[in-house]
Image (cartoon, rainbow, N blue to C red; front, top):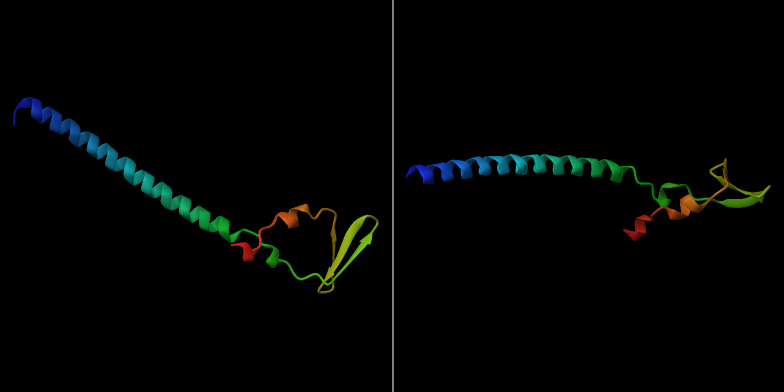
Length: 89
């Protein structure tokens, strides 16, 4: 091997090592993202996570609901309506 080929070979070897390091860092980054995604999926609320409501009534413009003997006051149902359903998935 002459000097020119040796220089090219060494340069390619260095580039190869740098690419291997980048690939390894990307692999660890993807693993961490996967773990974060799993945690976030566990935090998703579904409509089915809430108790069945037995009775509804309007008092002073807000809706009162009774479920299992507890009184809940909902002034805005838009957030509940936006929750995904487990049946949709």
